[in-house]
Length: 82
Image: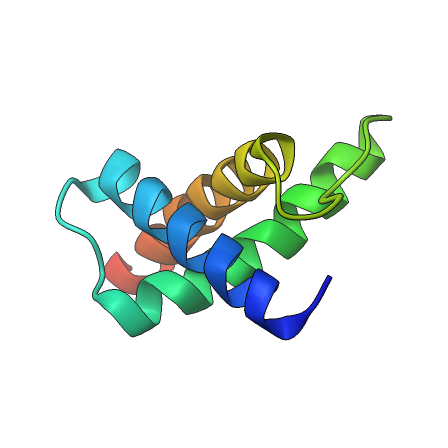
């Protein structure tokens, strides 16, 4: 996947994930970064459980990235508040 596709997927996944976790978002740049990290984490988690990870710029990959970004955001908020 190209860098531009990762940024687009990360931005959308980070935005959706941040809206699901804290309802207000983290800001555009942090949403993109958290979404990209979330896509990597989601791909790793899905691979560990026997499913395929991020496969390209499609709805399945968006779902994987959103789940990964939600997991990452929950951990991020738990550490940040501690």
